[in-house]
Length: 102
Length: 172
Image (cartoon, rainbow over all chains, first blue to last red; front, side):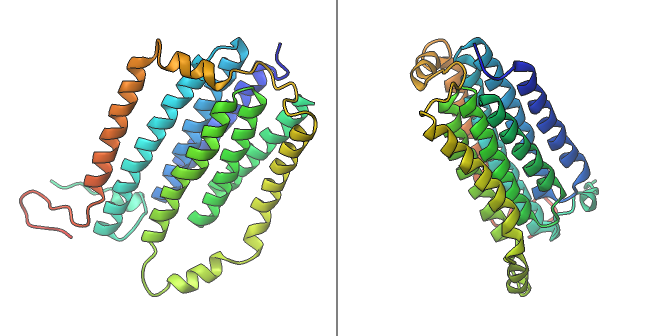
């Protein structure tokens, strides 16, 4: 019923998720970490779309819509935090922010 | 033919993501990230989720990436900005993303020329999504709106120019 096998779509989704995870773990620039988080959220959305396409239901796209709103809210708050960190410490290096107060 | 298009778009998405996490400049990474999102949008179209493909291009590759561009612009103030911009705008950096975008564009052309809907799997159109969204998923929509409101308030509060700390005076 579908031209694209479900396994390959899920494999692609897993590959993109792992790439985003590697980006989060390896990169130390805060903006790059946020971008890698976007890739991870996008990969989960792809998995939902693949499953929704496999069974021909609208639920997959609805879950993608919810992930989209989650990503928008997360990016707004995260970039606000990045701005505040840059104003206080004048750096975006995540390793140099390891000191806590008190 | 759908499978071939799927493989090409998948290769573009994975390659653009790998290039994204290995770039040193945030702006270069942003270019490749936009390409990755556009490739995933093409994949959504091939999977029959046309509405999600449109939202992917408009909201992800449009709105959210514009936020990143604004923040990167705001964080690069000072004397060295002009020199930095000159390095960023070297023509060599445009070639990779342009080639990937060209591949995706050719894919879209192939789909359009071959009759609009090139057997793109089971199509779940926007009407079905809307009916399900405002039927059984009404509570989820309300929760999403609350989440967006919380994100709005949080972003406004966090990005204020001076955030006063509690007791030990202000740290600007």
